Structure formats: C-alpha cells, structure tokens
Image (tube, rainbow, N blue to C red; front, side):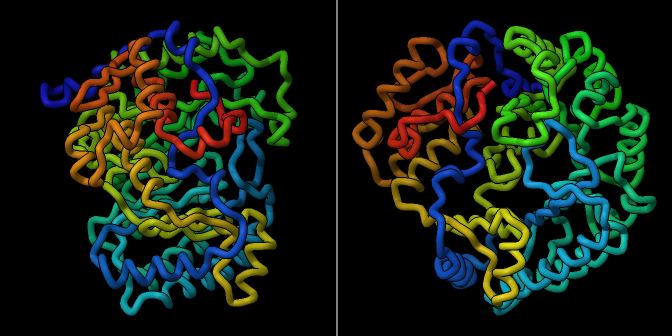
Length: 467
C-alpha cells in the first residue's frame, strides 16, 4: 500500500466491543430508510422532481439501475426480490413492460439525460439470453445518453452465463462486474443450493479481465450453514489468489419466518454467534494483511481501485447498491421493486410483478410508495453520509452548509454519541465527530444516533443484525 493510502487501513477489529454493541440496524442505503416510505401516490412528486432536475441541474451526474428479477434456481440464503422460473420467455414479457416504463420516464425530459453510471441487478441479470441483453441495452441507449467513460456494471452468476455474454456486455461498454461466490466449500454450497466450482468462478473472472473489465467484485457471505473458520480460511485463500479488485463480505441474516427459501436450511447446520464472529475476525484480518482497504461496512478494495480512491478523495457515497464512487448522484431505477432518488424525492416501484404490469397497462409509472424529504431529513442524511462514507463529520463545515448550530440542533443525538464515546467508538470534540479505528465496524450503530425516524419508532427489530 502506498503512503497516501496508509490512513485508509486505520481499522481495528475488537470482538468484545462488537459483541457488546451488535444490535439490529439499518444499512443506510438511503435516509430515511425504505421502511419509512409512505404507501400511496408518489407519481406527481416524482415527475416534479424529474422536471426540476432538468430545469435546475441538467448536467448533474445521473445513475441508472435496472432490476431483473428472474432466477432459474433459488439460493436458500437469498432475501432479494426474485422470481424463480426456467422460462426465458417471461423475460421477453418483462422487457416489453420495462420498455414502456423507460418511455414514460424519458417523456419527462426534453433531451436525453446523460448517464454516468449503470448497474444491472436482480435476481440474476445473466438469466437473460444474449438477445434479451442486447434488446435491453438498445432500449436504454435510445432513451439515455451514456457518457463515453460511464461506469457500467452487472451482477454475474457464473453458473448462468451464456457463451458470448461477457463479450456482448463489453461491446456495450460494461467495465465492471460483481460475481456471486458466497463460499467455495462444497458442503456449504450444497446446504444453500448453490453448487459453483471454484474453477468456474475463476474462469469468469479471468475472462472478464481479458476483455477489459477494470474492476471485479466478489461477494462472500459469513454465517452460512455448514460454514466454519476452516471453510472461511480455505475460501479466502483461493479468492485472494485471484486478487479481485473488490470484495463484499456480507453477514448472513437467518430469518426463515420472513424469507421462505431459508426454511430449507436446517437450524442445526447454523454456526453459533461465537463462530460467526470468529469467521468475521479471520476474514477481516486476512483481507487487511493481504493489502485490501476497508471501505466501510461490508466493502473492501485494493488501494488503487476507484472505490478506495473515492474514499480518500471524499467523493464516496452510499446508494441502494451500497458504496459508490460518485458523490450525490441522482438515481433513476427501473423494474419491479426498484427505488429511485431524484433530489429530495424517493420513489419505489411495486414489488409484485403483476402490480407492476397493471400500473404500466394503465399508462402510469409503476410506483407503489415513496417519500419527499423534509429539511430535517436532508440534514440528517448528510450527517449519516459523512459518518458512513468518511468516518468523520466536520462540524464547522456542516454548520456553514446547513445554517444550523450543530450542538443545539443535535442535542439528543449528541447525548447518544457521548455514550458511544465512553466505549471508544467515537471521539467527539467541538470541531468534529471522528469514528475511531475500533468503531469503524460499528459505523451503523453510530449513524443510528442521528436517525430521528428510528428513534421515534422505538424499534429496530425489523432490521438485520449489524454484524
């Protein structure tokens, strides 16, 4: 790691502190969080936000997200909004409706808005045939103006990748991919119904690199059935030999009462809380020793990767896909359950496919719920963003930006922060709030101090565990 990146590795894993503070909490891919969105009409507010963007900030960075929900097999751990089917024809119907949604959004712009980021997620985006992928990209490129250096990424399931798909995507400008791995141990893979030989994953990674994909992320999960410190060590050893630019290390949340596929996982196969924490400690220690930078929450990156550079340069942000490289980027999200944010407005599409289709049949944007942020929401969103993306909040700059007296505005919040300061998670002084190296793995707990909606709700049980 070069000297200019050395401070990014300033993180300390404290198992006792993590165990003491490990409660339930939001992931803050948005603030207010999606559970605070209000059911009902949001279309007029969303359209107004699109028109206001065109009028006031037409050249601002714009990100696109497309949700492709289909999978032909179900991984038992998965909590995503997905539809299991082997019928590729269902994707043709879905693309018909997606084309309609794109047209409704595009009609709100006098000229094609310029796109600097695109992400295809799911589900399994590579469920689509090559012809279907080509059709999707043609639809998007006819409606939007993609920058020449746009960051285009896709989630890849190596088991469901058509011949020529990576080449086709590269021809359309894709330069990043995220490969689902989770764990390489065959017994763990069998327990979660995802048999994926290491050689298959490696072949996809190497082919992507040969085609010019400049950043490849691998998803790993700790806390899966049949998993242990030994299986985690073996998985990490193989993964690190591939040297992916990014690694996402997710905690498995076992919630069979909420997610039906998880009911196929035997409780007896689940690792204990102690073993799960030991797996996390091993993974974190191994990744840091291998030269990866801890970006925050679940994300690690090589120091030369754009994500690490964005952290250092202060342009890192969080959105509905996790950490991202462009600061304060509006997001148009398309497809079932997708969530957009334009300016101060959040808008989420219907989660149910038939509801999504029915709205479009009525010539309406398929929106189910949303929220227009208050000024207080925007102020708190900025505070949470600074803490999660930079591990610090500069109080004088914040006061100047928002025209507030920080200590007065955040009196109850700072009382909670002082409690965390006593435990060594943060350092609080007149000019800043700084998350300590020991507190970085508990940044969500720190951010929760500024979450007025969460405090009013008096409950965090609906959220996953922080670790």
